[in-house]
Amino acid sequence: MYLLLSVYIDKPKDITEIACQQARASQMVCRPVTMRMGLRGSFLEQLWVFETYQSQAGGHSFMFLVTRSLPLVKMSGHTPSVMRLEQRAAEADHIIDYLKQQVQLLKEKAKVQATVREEKKLKVENTKLKRDIEQLKQTLLEKSRGVREVAMPTAGDSSVQCASKSTPPQPLSPARSSTSLVVTASPPPKNSEGKKNKPEKKEKGEKKPAAPQEEAKVDVSRLDMRVGRIVTAEKHPDADSLYVEQVDVGEAAPRTVVSGLVKHIPIDQMQNCMAVLLCNLKPAKMRGVVSQAMVMCASSPDKVEILDPPSGAVPGDRVIFQGFPGEPDKELNPKKKVWEAVQPDLKTDGQCVANYKGAPFEIAGKGVCKAQTMSNSGIK
Image 1 (cartoon, rainbow, N blue to C red):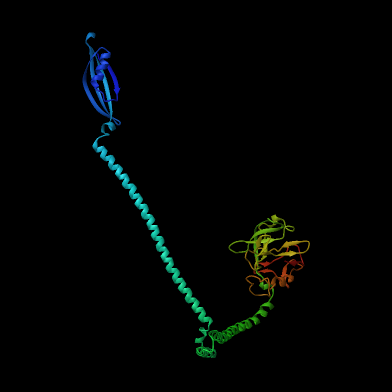
Image 2 (cartoon, rainbow, N blue to C red):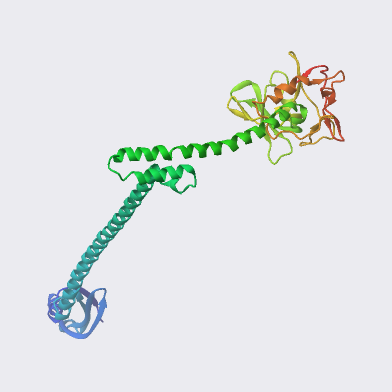
């Protein structure tokens, strides 16, 4: 019958001695049987198997295991090859540090060289600029002294040449000679300016006859009135009496229109309302909002009604007036006061039809524009 006992040691002692000590402690006889070696992590392990027996016990024997573990690092830490490897690694670290220092020095040197090159380049450019400035100064001085007028084939040129030839004699000082040149050279520019100004005066004279013709034709044909649909309407954020509307007048985007209709027309009646708009007034800012058109209304001190286009009219349809042909202005000039001249003749007749001097507001092929109930009222 065998009994396995295991002992683990990590010191380089004699395995047999340890086994015998263990056997004597148990009053047994010990002898080695087998030994194995193996790696366990970073340790070299030796596994010894001893057979122990006790003669007085009638031949009973036991198996005794002893394991010895030796660190590999300790076994090879002082060998010459390892020392050489460590030395070479240290030398490699020193070489790497040295190379890093050299690279840093080269970078700094390259920066300095680039700065020097840039400085030289700037100095050359500054020198060239100074030379160009001096040349320009010289050219300006020559022009101011009359050199440019010498090439002009005029009588003034001969006087300049004579004056320049007469300057060498000593009785005349340099200052006087220079002033004489300036005096003789100065008249031609005045003549040239006079010649240049004459055509401009003629052009202005040609434009003057056209102005009275345009001023004489101040009528409703110069107003760009179109049918529009009020897409949205809301209260002005800074004025209680104003609406801010987005109106479709047949263009790519709706126009913003500011109208003082809060006291006369409820906001729900403004939504999707068809109306007539004056579209070529100059845009004006009203309490911080730019208005790009004006809603045409029949108006009296007590009541205001939006003019209704005829049924079938669509946004963008132009309002025309029989007897007043012509294309409207792209934008009315406030200084010409065309709107102020035309507005007093815009009225509704007894049938509530909007008209200008008897000519109704008409949409070609669709009908006329009317007020709802207001007859013989002004329109604005």
